[in-house]
Image (cartoon, rainbow, N blue to C red; front, side):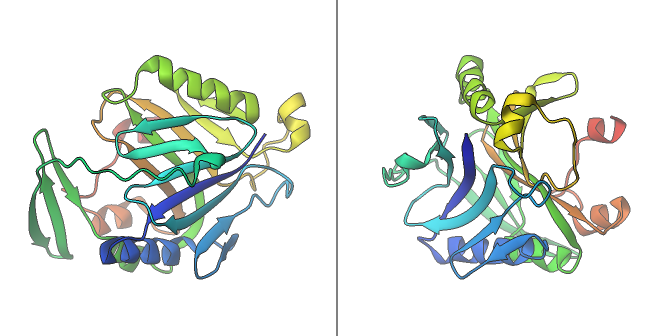
Length: 251
C-alpha cells in the first residue's frame, strides 16, 4: 500500500523559501498537523491507522516533486512537476529549459499581485505571504491535496495507468459521475481488501487526481476548509487572482 504522499518543494531561492514558510504557517493551523523546522505532517485521525499520511518538505531541487512511499514504482514528468515513488527522491533532475516570461506587479485595494505572461497565457498570482495574511486564524482543516494533470502534457492513457497504480495500492473513489476526477481516501490495510463501510470524518487529507482538459500547466492543490463564509472568501480573493468553479456550487 501507499503509506505516505510527500510534497517536496524547492528551497533554492528566497522566493521559494518564503513560499514554503508561509504555506507551512497556514497549514499548521490545522489541529491535526505536526510541524517542525523542516516539514509538516498530516495523519488521519479516524481511523488512526489509516493511510496514506501527507507531508510537506523542501529539498535542493528546481521544481516540485510529489513522492509516494510504498510498494509501487513509477516516475512521471508532468510539465515541470515530477510524480514518482519515494525511491526516486534522490534522482534529482534540474529543469534547465526556460520559457520567456513577462512579469508585471499590479495592485488592488487589498495589496499587490503579480501578472506573468508567457507565449500562450497570462497567469495572475498572489504571494503565499498574502494568502497567509488573509486566511490567518480561520483555518479549520486541510481537506485534501491533489494534482490536476493537463491533457496538454499527459495522455489519457498515461493518466489511467497511474490511476490504476493508485487503485491497486490505495482506496480510490471517483467524484460522482466523473471518472477523470478521483480521490485517494485514507483507509486501513483491512479496508483496502473489504472496502470502506464507514466514512468517518477523520479521513483527511484526501488526495485528488484530476485529468484536466481545461488547463495548460499542472496545478498542485491544497484545498482548505475555513471558518469564513463564501462571501467573505470572495471579498478576500477577488478577480483576477481569485476564481471559483460555478459547477461545484451547483452540485
